[in-house]
Length: 114
Length: 112
Image (cartoon, rainbow over all chains, first blue to last red; front, side):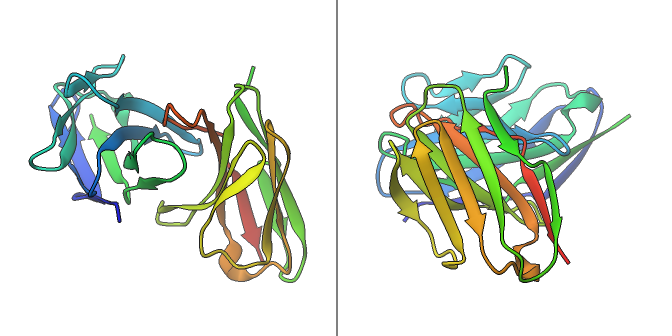
């Protein structure tokens, strides 16, 4: 059975500093991997996804994540964060074609301080 | 245009009542979901429908009954509401072979 572990429940960081949000998964088959972001009082929005191909994927707002099959990880990074990046970040994994059932991690609260 | 919409946004009700939450998507997706997010932000899937057919039914009390009248709508009816049902409920949709899901804004249910 698939599972997702987000190793940090909260990550405080100063503005313009780099950040890494960690995500590990377990699955016996090939997986699709996602990062979603949830701003206060809103629904989740897709940040980036890995389906196949290049193991490094990027979002339009400067985040990137790298799929590491040997370490079963999909860590999210940003070289310089902004106050507006403060949000809850969820790593998610789905097996096979990506439909049906997606398992979400417990979330990491990124708090960017001025 | 809102891609995935839910009504109502807030729902405050007393224990024992019956309530419904409606969800509509205009993305042309073939799969829709209901999730429950608790106070610690933990997100748990409840149901999933593909082309109006139930394909995922997690261990959810049978007081919860989803209904999908067509591919664009997935409603959630809850009978005999309990205090533990208080949470934010999210509807989402996806195209089955794409994987990524599009979420509605959520319905905050408070049972008193």
